[in-house]
Amino acid sequence: MARLLPELAEVDLPGGRQRQLQEFLMSEIQRDQRESGAARRVQRRLLFATAGLAAAAVAAVAVGTGALHTGTVPAGSLPTDTTPQHTAQNPPSKHAPAPAFELAAQYAAAQPYTPPRPDQWVYVKDHKSNPSSIAKDKGQRQDEITEVWRSVDGLKMAEWNPDTGKFDTWTQDNGYPEAVALPTDPGKLLDAVRGQLQHEAGGVPAHIKPSDDMDSLLFGRLAMILESNVLPPRVAAALWRGIGMVPGATQEPGTVMVNGRPVVAVGRVQEGWRFEQLLLDAGTHEFVGYRSVAAKDHTFTSPTGPIRIKRGEVQFTITRVAAKFVDKAGQTG
Image 1 (cartoon, rainbow, N blue to C red):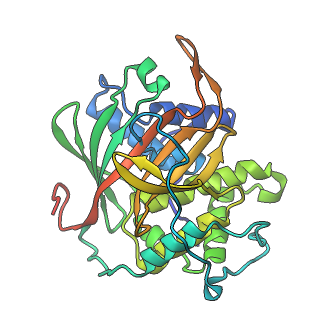
Image 2 (cartoon, one colour):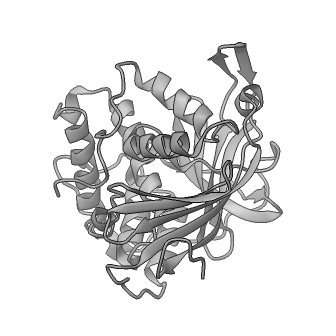
């Protein structure tokens, strides 16, 4: 597969360490209230182009810094007939995926699905909150509803711009045709996405890069594809199984309360301090959102000085409100 998502074609990023870019994206995901509609479009293009560099491209938020170890994870077991195919690029994991990844895959695989027409749009509505110290330092919105439309043919995007009160539509390769064409075998899917990441990095073989860097990029890209699209059930199921195979992917013990709803959190600690969590309904294991929680104390350097982030502080959360196919940009039902 030649390409899975748009590459860095519209924005020429300067060199720098991945850590700096990831922290920049995490702090910038909630757009400054003073930005114009044009600036919002440029930033959204940057976020899609660099989505594989940071899980922040799928940023989501929870309220407060609630307990991370409450309740009980529903029982479940890994079936023997969904064992992923391992390849040279995707060697067997040293640990079995946590049960919730398979339960999420089973839920996704069982959902009804009618392929969209080429002239339709993918509509995703999210509730984003951003209670972090970084967001407060930058004067960013702490609560926001976002609505984004992606054309099924992969050529356009649209969104409501709260800064101008206008509806913005622009031409952009949104990567949707490539996402729905991903392999339905988890091992082959991981190979395809890793290959895309290597291509974007200039073709440098993954085995000579620090392994955690590639694993971090891989988790971020898979999570972004999952959160941003309405996918065929078999592709969505393969994504869940593939994410569970990424080294470092884990399941938070117990359940987490997000906006009064018990959820199961699965994810990965990124950059050594952010636990990026995909949120699943505790009863059905339906995907319901994404959040980032500080896994340990961390200091973020901003223009106004150091910002000290405490372990357990929620950085951001997306709660999914709606995801469906619609007939035109701007339509919601």
